[in-house]
Amino acid sequence: DAGVIQSPRHEVTEMGQEVTLRCKPISGHNSLFWYRQTMMRGLELLIYFNNNVPIDDSGMPEDRFSAKMPNASFSTLKIQPSEPRDSAVYFCATWRSSSTDTQYFGPGTRLTVL
Amino acid sequence: RKEVEQDPGPFNVPEGATVAFNCTYSNSASQSFFWYRQDCRKEPKLLMSVYSSGNEDGRFTAQLNRASQYISLLIRDSKLSDSATYLCVVKALSGGSYIPTFGRGTSLIVHP
Picture 1 (cartoon, one colour):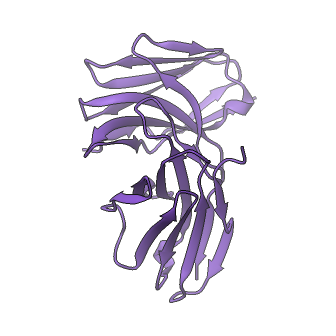
Picture 2 (tube, each protein chain N blue to C red; picture 1 turned 135 degrees about the horizontal axis):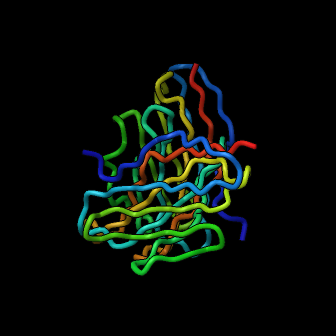
Picture 3 (cartoon, rainbow over the protein chains, first blue to last red; picture 1 turned 135 degrees about the vertical axis):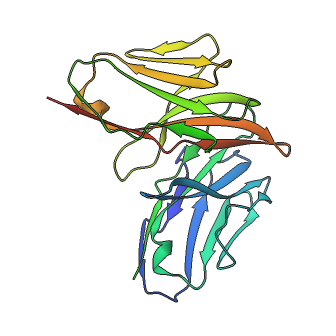
């Protein structure tokens, strides 16, 4: 299994630009999570999907952030417009949603907004 | 109060030392517990699950104390390669789904 796949691995953009991060979960995993990690705030849960349906997006910072999961094998996190304070590492993690299963993380997207 | 709290460290120890980390959680309905390891500029990876009776994996021992709501990780005979950040993870049922909550992590530096 290829594991959780994220793209791009690195993104450098200018303030005001739209940024789209992509995630392909492990086949058969029906829950998908988007996290943001910074030195100041640690690992923050932004949103999670269960069977492609968004369950809780209370962690999404503001309206500039949106996430979709059009099918079981693909999800996107979009920031429009981006701001310097959005600079962070964004991780996608997936699992089979049972109490004993653990999450598997993708390699992350390191985003820098200038 | 944060849901999952860890001492950020860093814990700076010599090779061969024994080091222990604790993690406290506030949700008494938490059902499963894990330790993850995160290397610099890498993603978190599962180190071990934590079972009620305690469990061991080589040099690593994890324990759970439900009454006091904390979990611990003990590393014996520390190696240079153990240097990393160790994240405590607690899963609880919320709105019909199991949700993991991560601690901020404890940084470990093992020096020669």
